[in-house]
Image (cartoon, rainbow, N blue to C red; front, side, top):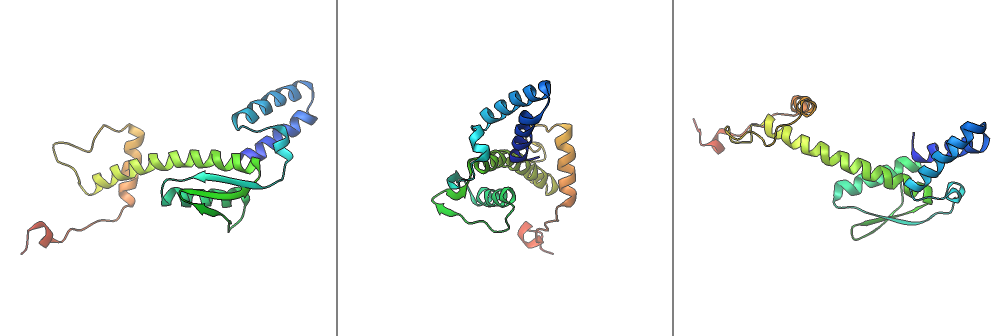
Length: 166
């Protein structure tokens, strides 16, 4: 469940729930609002304002645009670019949802790219035979690396480049 839906459901429960349920929902709502830097009025505020997000490279920019499209449920999103910033017209609630997802997915991509490169090095034997490929991965990482190597295509180095012309 996304942040927007979760906040709305918890708020509804805090307004309509029975005594203990209502109190628990109120505490949860307060905690969630603090976590995302929002107020209760932000939950009903539909005013769109310019919100900017910083990205570091093309992949982060593309990720951000995908997330905005997902949160807004729109196939095409309008934004303005200013140096390494994308600017969108969003409500505070949409901004919080997009910011949370962007930070979460950006970290996940970095972790996956790290494993992808390790898998690529293993698949194509790009390491000194005595050195291995760096620090020892966990069992879970090894399983993911093996799965990745199985789905990668093969790179064939022409014999002429290796000096083995026949």
